[in-house]
Every structure is written in structure tokens, then in C-alpha cells.
Length: 423
Image 1 (cartoon, rainbow, N blue to C red):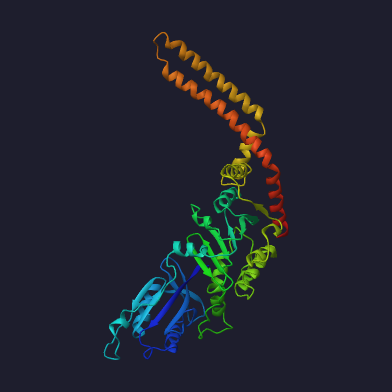
Image 2: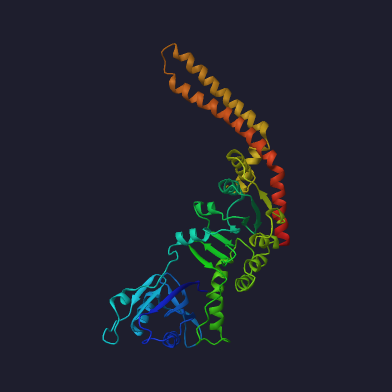
């Protein structure tokens, strides 16, 4: 099965008397290109198509009614610029100008040089940052371990309600989580919903692997008129472009969500509240996004409060040792069994190691008075002693830390298991 992603394009007509909206739509119909589009009301035409493969081939319908990868983005842009007169075509960063016949109409040099205004961010990094540059509450679903949360809360200096959705963390805060964008390396799966100001549309940002999409609940472009609403081609456009493309990117192995529910939520007038419900999250999350709820009211979540750098480090270390960090749970489990659940064995081994190191030191100092080589023996012996004593101290510290945090960790795990069984 082919994997598709959407790209957006724009046709800017330098002379609206030469090319009409019907001419543009007739081109897409003749070439049987699947997608969406409509006039922008300012002399241009905005459209969206699905592409697949490394060469970015456009989803096209053949005579048998099957969808296939047709011409590439570059070829489509060139063909549009050749078939349509006095236009500028921009599709997924590929730009071309059609032939300009200066004898047909009087067009000034300024008009020819005029480009389509684009005040929005253009790069992945700029769009990623712009998604967070909004005021108001924020919901973030991200494939990060729990051990990262104390550091984020410390950096934000704001409380945060945290729970789990599948293998992903769900973080809810009353302000923009700017520090999430600074995580390196960036997580491979990230969903962010920003409520914004009252007069603004909420913003959805979805990042998966190395690509991203945004959504603002302002609606979809209409499907090209030539596509029959009762056909499989129409269903393809609905599923692979517009809200369908965003929903497709949001449905991943790390969370349990149904494509149809997510797509319906993106088209719902309820906005983020419908999306929260589609994810199976408590309605109190939507209340916080709308500014009417409190973080402490979100059920089955833990409220992380800002703390000192030392306390944040201890929390992170405790979660790592408990298997809720970047370290594989199996590796953390082995560490707990060997070092924390058998402190007497660690102490015995470390004491024996320190004794061996002490003997080496004594032997080295005994040779020093007779002019024999002793410095290397003393260096190795000292290192062995320090290593043994350090292991005893760090093991005792880690065991006490996990013991103090064990109740919180057990509560978290019970909550996670409850969500998996009732989500």
C-alpha cells in the first residue's frame, strides 16, 4: 500500500482576464489529479494534493479508477506554468512562472516582479517554534519517558498535569511549554494543541519522524469538482488530504486512537474538546484548554510542581532507576536486582575490592623506601579503593532515593495500568 503525504500549492494569476478559476479546475480534471482547491479571493487559487515516494509523485486516477503515482511535483509545476498564461505556480517549495506575453496586456514591471505574500514560517524549525509562540493553555502528547518531566517542569517553572496515553506522555499546562521545543534529539512523535487567545483559532501541530502538519479548525478546502462524491477516488481524497492527512499522521503505534474518530474531531465545531474526547482523555483536559478547569482536577494524572534543581535531578534519577526513563526497563530491572535489592552483596564485594586496593597501596609505599618502582602500583591501588568506596556510597544513595520515591512510582504505574485497561 502506497504511503501518501499532502503538499499545498498556490497559483497566482498576474492577469486574471487570461485565466479563470474554471480553467484551473479544468486542468486538474483533464489530468485526473486528486486533491482539493478553491479560489483564494485575491486573484489566486489554493490547492492541496497528495504525493508519494521520494520523487514526490502526484496521486492521479487512471482510466480504470485506480489511484497511482503520476507525474512528479516538478513536472506538474512546469505543466501548469506552460498551460496557464501569466501565472506564478508554487507547490511544495517548487516555483515556476509561465510564459509572459507582454503584447497581450499592459503589465508593469512591478506587477511581474510581485510575489505571493507569505508572512508565515517556511521551515520545519520555524513552524515548530511558531506553534509554541502562543499564549494560553497547552496539551502535549509526546513519546518521552517520564524521567524527562521533572526537568521540563523545572525549566518552565509552572505546574503540569502528566498522565499516559499508550506509550506516550500526556502533559497539560496552563501556559506554552517552550522547553519542549528545546529537547534534543527531538522526539519522533509529538502532538501539540495550543488554545491561544479567545479571538484566535486553536492550533494543532503534529510531528512524526521528520515531517509535520498543522491544523487550526478553520475547515478543509473543497474536493475538486470533477471527482464524483460516490466514488473511491472521493474517499481517497477525504482520507489522504485535508483533515484526513492530519489524522493519518496522528494515528501511530505509540497511542491507541482510531483514524475515523480523529478525523471527525478535526472537522468538529467543538475543536480541541472533540479531539480530547477522540483520544479518550478526561474532559477536564479540555476544560483546562478552554480556561475553565484546573490541573489538579484532571483524573488519573499526577501534578508535577516546580522544584529546585536538586529535587528535579533526584526525581529524574528515581524514575530512570524505576524503568520510566531512557534506560531500557530490562536494564533498569537488572540494576535494581543486583545493586538495590541486594545491598549486602554490593557492600561485601566493594569492601573486598577496597581491601585489595589498600593492600596494593601498602605494597607500593613499602617499595618506595627501597627505591623500587612504586608509583604505578600506588595509582592503581588508590583507584581501586576509591572505586569500591564510591560504589558503596552511590548504591546506598540510590537505594534510599528509590525507597523514598517508590510510593509515587507505584501510584504512577497503577494509574498507567488503569488507563490501559479502561482507556
